[in-house]
Length: 63
View 1 (cartoon, rainbow, N blue to C red):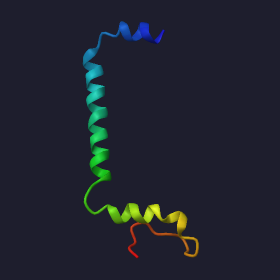
View 2 (view 1 turned 90 degrees about the horizontal axis):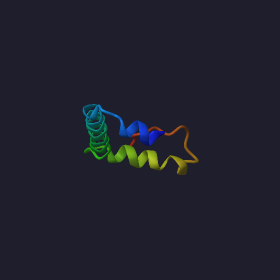
View 3 (view 1 turned 60 degrees about the vertical axis):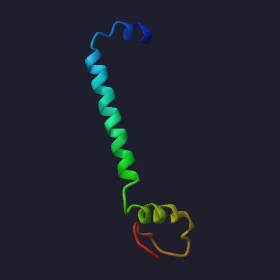
């Protein structure tokens, strides 16, 4: 059934638009993740499971 629907789908512009929106969002997430200055935030978030003796961890705090 899915192949029949996709083979008769006549709005190729809508398909291209959906792909462009998805691709732009993907590139935005990549740039946001690897932006300058975010390393300390992700390092502190990655060390949360190892902070047993401290109280509630604060993301972005430098040690």
